[in-house]
Image (spheres, rainbow, N blue to C red):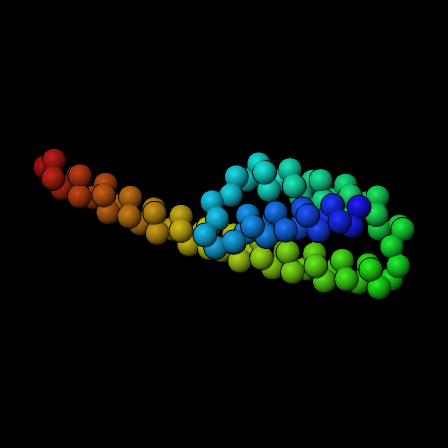
Length: 94
């Protein structure tokens, strides 16, 4: 199961990459699968493995936060650009 979690983590890292254009539904699905695996796996892990998994989870969350901020920045730029296009259209039709 630990291998499956690491495979999910790898895919999630790919989705959180700066140049990625992820599908939010895929992210939610993968996170749900990861959570289910963790719930089954945690009781069987040693303290060292739990600590390692915690570090990996925190790293993944940091990547997700950076991706969220980057996505917000992209949307803000697009929105500003769209406002500019709309303003130009408004002026050009008057």
